[in-house]
Length: 210
Ligand code: TYD
Image (cartoon, rainbow, N blue to C red; front, top):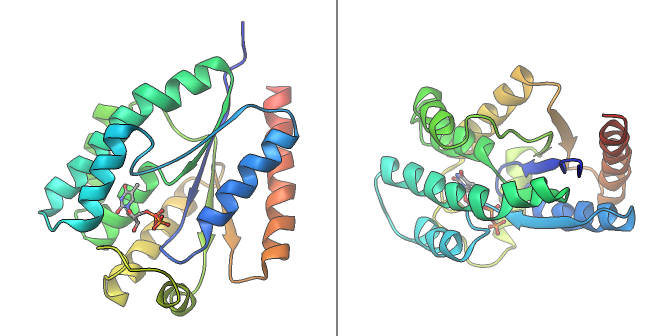
C-alpha cells in the first residue's frame, strides 16, 4: 500500500512573505524525490479560483465571506488535497483553515466557535502535518504591501484588523505547538531558508520513520 503523503501549510498575515517560501519548499521537496502538489487557498480548483476572485473583490457579509472560504476549501479538499495525499504525494498549501480562524475568526471578530463548527462539518479529520507561521512585525508587513501590486479587499484593511489576525495566529500556534513552526520572516531571506531547510528535513525524517 502506498504511504499517505504529508500535508504542509503556510500561514501568516499579508506581507509576511509566505508565498515565495511556498514555492521554495515545494522545489526542495521535489529535489528530495517527492511528488509535490503546490496549491493555495482560497482557490486550488477552477471553482475555488472563481470563489477566490469574488471574496477578494466583492463586498459581502462576514457570514457569506466565511462560508465562501469553506465552500472553496470543500472543493479543494475533495478534488485536490485528499486525492493527492492518498496517492502518496506531498501537498504544500499556501493557507488553509488556520487562515479562516485568524482572518474571519480573529481579524473580523466572527469568533473561533463559528469557524470550529464549519471545520467540524467540512473536514472533521483533515489537519496539516506541519504548518509554518511566517511572522513579521505589522509595520514591516504593511511596508512590504505598500510596495506591492494593487491591494485586495483584505490588504486594504486597517492596522487593527491585522493585529487581531496576527494574534489569532499566535494563539493557534501556542495551542498546537507540535504542528506549528513559527518563522521570523523579518530576517534576511537566506536565514529564513536555513531555518526552513532544517525544519523541512525534520518533517521528511519523521515521515520516513512513521
Ligand atoms: P494570500 O495568501 O494573501 O494571497 P496573495 O499573497 O496572492 O495575495 O490570500 C488571499 C487573502 O485571503 C488573504 O488576505 C487572506 C484571505 N483569507 C481569509 O481571509 N480567510 C481564509 O480562510 C483564507 C484561506 C484566506
